[in-house]
Amino acid sequence: MTLTSLLPTLRDSLPAPLAGDAWPARTHATTRDVVIAGVSVLRYAELCGTPCVTTAPAIVPLSGGVPSATASTSVLVAAVTGCDDGMLRLDARLDELAPCWAEARLLGRISHAAERRWRLGACTVVLPADLGVGDVGALPCPGAVGLGEIRPR
Image (cartoon, rainbow, N blue to C red; front, side, top):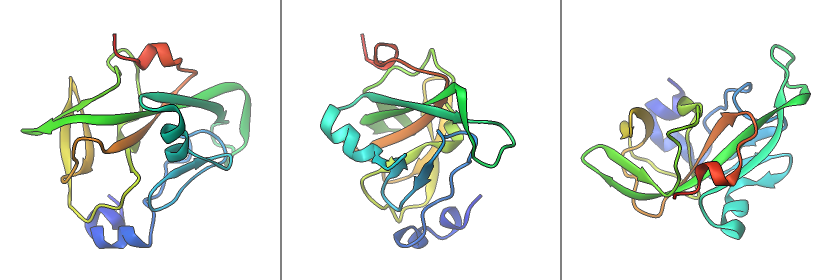
């Protein structure tokens, strides 16, 4: 649990910390976005539409942030298409992947609502309770994921 989980008003000035090994190398959070090697994930989603995916070098485990020469980490970006009765629906197919659910991020706005558990198929994800249709989120996933793997059929 982080300070921003306990005191949601801190989200205005303090980005929630990232688990360094779950995200690609050279990734940092802002209050409204995730930036990978200088590229805004939110802006990327605005240009490409959702769902979208970006892949960059993974971090070598226990290296303090050294980019891997061989391993990749992807960031999946999806929009909320429905959220009611604790059930969350996205415009992406994630059921065949193994994303790091604990690292899910709301992009594009700061929420002062408390966090809650949302069901997403067989998984649960903790995001602000005031999620609405059209909200966009980012989720890291180990390996190189292609757009065809997350695009709805």
